[in-house]
Length: 264
Image (cartoon, rainbow, N blue to C red):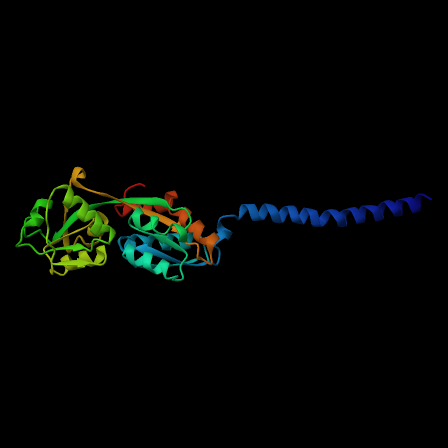
């Protein structure tokens, strides 16, 4: 009798263990998923980010840092003037996230993006040829008809900001050309095709061996804001959202500020 009872108890123990084992495994799996949340969001993802031309250098550094933090993730950037990027989004270009150099352009894409967040700010400077041979000291000097001044086109964020600061000082500047993005303005000055141009402070900082930067006082300057957002057309929404969120994280902010960008 006792032998039979003992056998029944043993069988019951085996059945109970068998029933509990999957539950235990399930709990372990859930815990692991929670611990790996964030990294798994972008693991193995291939992201395409449309970004303002003025972010060219700093985003290459930021992208490398992000890929190191998220093994298996590849971030590819497409840089252009913000107005060009907006046109690409409207045309359905395959991309996952967008970062513009102004809020106006981003606001015009509300139906195409998730809620944007400002990740950085910037200021304008006057870029001159190396050594500033024309002795340009401020905005007023740009009105000299003997000077070759180049500006960005008015539909480009930096062109709009340039017009804003010049209009505020009631200054009229007749540029020899109007460029499609800030890097094109900088290039004209670097190559000696222009005596001066208005660019972002961070762009001038990338070419200190070829141009000089003349500061514009804060009272006469404009603040450029850089909003970032996930694109609704993205096929990697979770990973794109993780990247956009990371741009506001301490490591990304350190990279941006080291390049001269201001805090959001």
